[in-house]
Length: 237
Image (cartoon, rainbow, N blue to C red; front, side, top):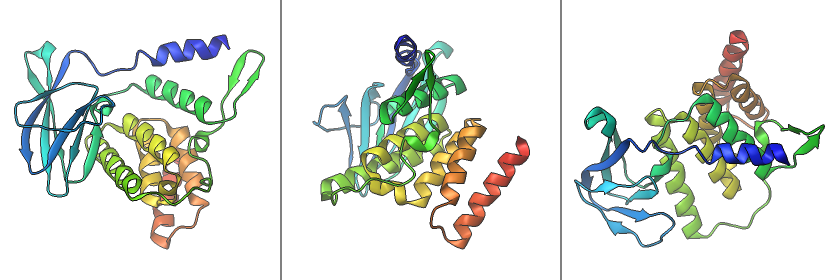
């Protein structure tokens, strides 16, 4: 279990850069923020500075614009993020991960969510589908509140994807689908995960996801899109 402890210790170093600050630039309609796991949502306004452990949520007619400023560069704006209606975004996911950090975290996710084997003091990890499974497990019908939460969180992953936070987009989407297995059945969610891995330069992981997706029930258009990705990745080697 020594390797396991070492991997876990390394994962703990993955965090938002302390040299960045996130500021609310614009707010329209219903926009609220909470701190950490606190369920007490508070209205936010332009000029508010948010913390890495905060979450932001927009209502049906709400939207917001966040600015990420680099303190080390004299407050230069490095990114402007527009958050549309009906989104729940954890700011801890608004960060860039290296390829190594993503691979390390994926490994930990697999260990946590799957059966892993210890052989000759080495960790043998199954493929990427282990995190969410090839076939979602049976589950009770989601309550209305759970459905809303799941939808808001998946919309948050779409924001991450749109602004190039591909590693955290993939990780977050996988975690949400694990918690809400019914979301695993939606093509757009699984395709986004595969494409996020591809854009994070994890070709093998992405190919595995596309191949697994190709074996599911798809429309002609969806199958064509997946096959095109598979052919492209195989050509790249």
